[in-house]
Image (cartoon, rainbow, N blue to C red; front, side, top):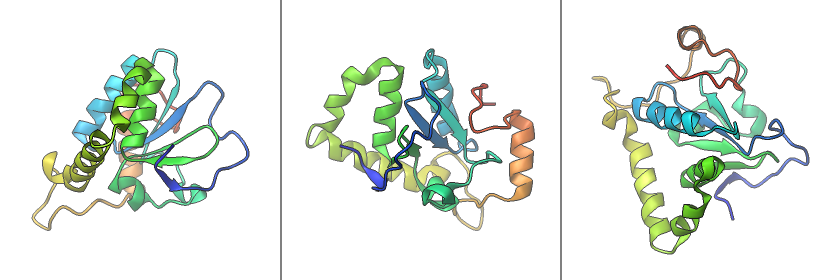
Length: 167
């Protein structure tokens, strides 16, 4: 059972064969970047497709989401096109790198609610927690063409399928 952002499922595979999950991540978030770097190192079988939110070929509206929704909390996509979000994304990511045996514990009543609440609290406050608030507040940034070009050229990533280390 998945926590679906959208219950519509495409009747075709949308991820390359061999990929179990795609994760959409905020490459500007230091904590998020550390988690992605850990996952990249552990993903020896290349089962995860890492897609930074500034990828020039990322068009979230094609699967029913906005950039703001992707920035508000972690989202992922399964091979059949199903969109997942929140803690369910982490369940799929850690299963893909061989920690699936731990995942049933994360679904135990009580533990599941605590994990969901904890992640929701983090997601809502991650800008403040990672030192990215300004005098104007902690609003999630909107991607601009300049941001995309700058971050893309700095990281060297040019595709949502890039598996190069995050930088």
